[in-house]
Amino acid sequence: MTLIATIDAGACAAHGDCEAIAPEIFAIDDVAVVVGQGPDDLMVAAAQACPSVAIVLTDAGGRRLYP
Image (cartoon, rainbow, N blue to C red; front, top):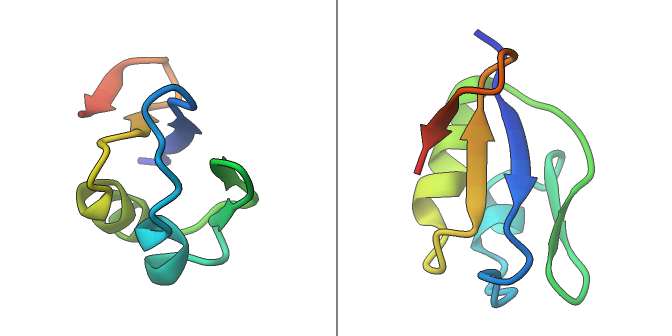
C-alpha cells in the first residue's frame, strides 16, 4: 500500500517531530509541509509522533487511515 500524507495546517503547531523522524517526507516552514515520499511505516511513525495529530494519512483511493 502507498500512503499519501497531507497536513492539517490548522492543527499543526510546527513542533518538528515529523521532520526529525522523516526529513525526506516532511519539512517545517510556518507549519509542516510534505516535501516527498517515503516508506509507509516511516509515514505512520511520523504521524503517530505528531503531538498535534496534524498529519493525515490516506490510501490511493482517498480512504482516511490515520488519524
